[in-house]
Image (spheres, rainbow, N blue to C red):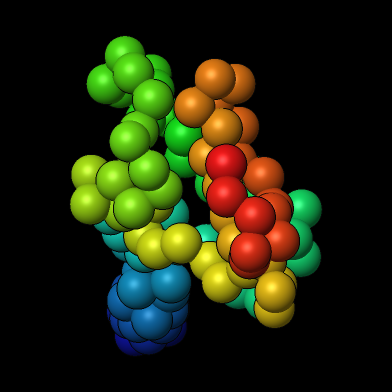
Length: 106
């Protein structure tokens, strides 16, 4: 009888030790807008901004007035820094974001 009790005790202890490892992991995703790609290439940053414009347009049925509206409306977390000497420009006709030299306006 003692051997059965010892085995049962070992099974219960093993189950108690393994139980925390079987728990469902909590999601670490935040409810806010997605952050821009860190140290992303210009193509990645343009893709991020253009996706933000598309998401804004789907939600609001219009184009944003400017890229800052994507941030204020919490569609994106922030506007990534453009390469030196350039700026991001939103074309109001096509709805596409492009890189423009800093001195050129569109």
